[in-house]
Image (cartoon, helix red, strand yellow):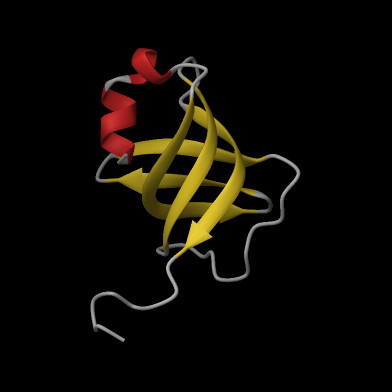
Length: 89
């Protein structure tokens, strides 16, 4: 799912395990936001280390439990794209 799909239907996904793709913003310490346009979800890694190739502006897919009350996810998996899809490399 996209960040906007989740944010715009937050109650539908509350306390559900979901997978969301978006762009990393505000990577500080062990937390960050994933964003799509003006929609954002706070990402809180749960007993995992953020991969080295996660940085502000990178595209990721996170999997975990969504919390509608504070628009956040406790995630146990962070996947990154291996290649720059814009150049086809």
